[in-house]
Length: 182
Image (cartoon, rainbow, N blue to C red; front, side, top):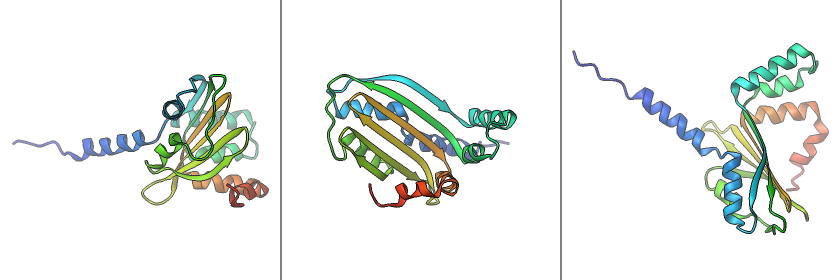
């Protein structure tokens, strides 16, 4: 009897891997920024990545230490699958271009849409979000750059729930998100 191995398992693995590959890492953002701003050499200073296992450990430590007595941090962390925070130094004399540079547009063409854009005099900040197939916000990418530093924060998980939890804890902070000033 000749049994064929079903293709569903390898196919599912490819689909999952492709979905993960489409989410840019902080290194992808830095590389994109460097390519679109060749006068700015980018050098990573710090990087912290918390995946599911590390997030589970952090939630457990918060509970054990009693540091988060209200459970706010644990509740927010429960909605996240991954947190990545990186800081990059920029070569002195880096000239920033105003507007929406190609470094950001590259991610827009891959399904990330701008939620907030803040183009202050001395720094530029973009908050981009990505929806899953169900229309829920599944990723958030925060990119902030000034003449000295590039900072990238990437969150994966149930971002709508994270935002709602944060707003419920501090309603006055919602005015920044929903003021329309972007």
